[in-house]
Image (cartoon, rainbow, N blue to C red; front, side, top):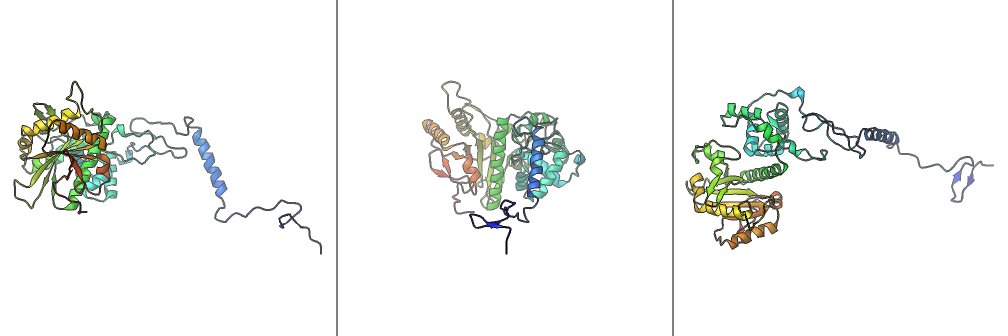
Length: 385
């Protein structure tokens, strides 16, 4: 019997009128080629509307518009407010959120959830509603040149949010300047302040987790009568923290107080001043040494000698925690203090990286000005947490 097919060199049978057949497509891959062709066409259409580098043109106007995204990913900007959600129901929960943002100046939604100890999803929805209703704003200096990256969005209170706190909480909040100030905030100042907020939120959460101490901010001290309410509290540029000394004026980035409920009154509080150093100040200069790290250290030493901490907070001792950029910069500050002959262990040092990655700031080993290991609360907590 004759067959129409013949054997090839590889031993395969094939028709003399056709080439060897290819492997059959899996049923799970059917239609994949058509889908890829459609995506390629979308990409070509997007590229025709780009600047020639695969990036969609920016077409924004004020707070609305679209952001630069890779081809095929045109999305609405995170800084666009929804006109459909321009009104929001204001209750105690929403006021607490605005209050927390005012207290720390800049906060992301996850940080607000950590401060208030609420569920992140609930806070995220509430924050979005407050932003759309203009009680909160998003400083424009954080608009990333590559906005498809998942960077956290920080919020600040607006003039409308300040008015809400004046009416509902009775705060002596300035009546204007919020919207203009935050929209024109310099990127360097914003990075410093957001790094400070990140540190303070972590410190608050770590103290709360440990459960042995209370962390008090200046506003808490005013509300409890520990500090005389001569000057209304403000989250920054608070006058009682602008200390004029013989060496000049020093203004800590923040002041917090640890309170131990288990110790007698008058012996249960310790003051910690916080300085977040991003490496922008020179260590020392031959002339005009005031705006340097050396000048700042001299002012803190003078403030301690003049009893500014006792005058303001009613405590006998204080310590200053420097959070800086590198170990090299820490060694430079320690050398300056050694050259000045400072023996008192009133300065603590750590890096921004260490404070971000540590399990707890209370268990973190800091270095004091003499190079020894120290802790924020004078207690070794390496075994905790």
